[in-house]
Image (cartoon, rainbow, N blue to C red; front, side, top):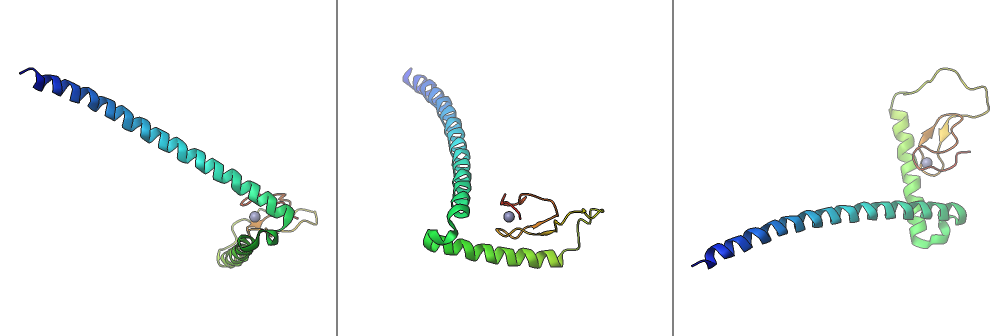
Length: 125
Ligand SMILES: [Zn+2]
């Protein structure tokens, strides 16, 4: 009976194909999830721009939730900053009227002269 060995060959060949297929599937799934992350990131940036332009209030429940989260995060960030020892007393006080402060959007602390929040990218005033 040659059929046993024939079947074996076919099985081995299709086994290799299966492996290739599995690798391809894994690769595609990873590519897709990368693209989804990039897409979500861009959505987030667009959302941020929209909220900056229109105000979160315009976006109903989601806007309210967002504001709540930001307030909550700002409070916790401020609390954390108080607990943590001063990390950066980077010497010279800049002779400008800029002062250290906290990002109004996300509450991240920034040092004088910083134009944009290092955490959320918001313009600092
Ligand atoms: Zn920020």
